[in-house]
Image (cartoon, rainbow, N blue to C red; front, side, top):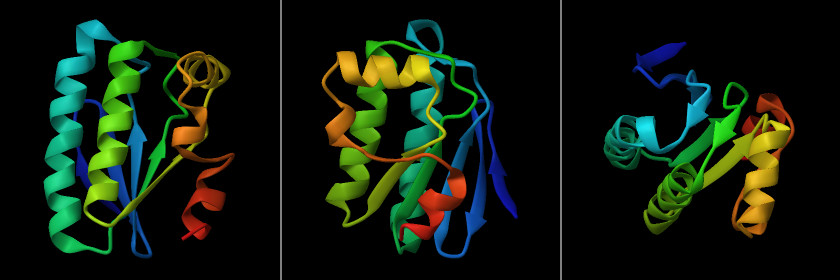
Amino acid sequence: MTALSTRSFYIEQVRNVTVVCFTVSSIVDPNYEYVSDELFELVEDVTANGPIQVVLDLGSVRRIDDWGLAMLRAFHETIESHGGTTILCRIPQSVATALNSAGLKDSFKLRETRGEAIWSF
C-alpha cells in the first residue's frame, strides 16, 4: 500500500516496515536540498509512529555525490538515534562504488533485494 508520494520518492508500508522507493535518478548537489527536505519530513512521521524500521530502495538512483551520501548517512544516524534501523537495498553499482570510495559501505546495513531487506527485521 502506498502511503505517501513526493517528488523524489514514494512510501510503501509493508508489515511494520516503511519502504522508501526513490524515484529520482540522482542525488547530487542540484537536487540534494529538496530530496533531503522530503526525506527528513518523513523522519518526523516515522519516528512518531514506531516501530522505526526503514528500508531505502535505491534501485532508481544512478548517480550520487558527497551531498547525497551525507544525506543518507544523516538519515541513517537520525533513525538510529531514535532507536530505529535503516537498511539500504537494490544498490546500483555506481552507488556502491561511491559508498566504497567514501568509506561508508560498513556504515550501513545492505541487502540485495527489497524482500530480503524487509524480512531482515
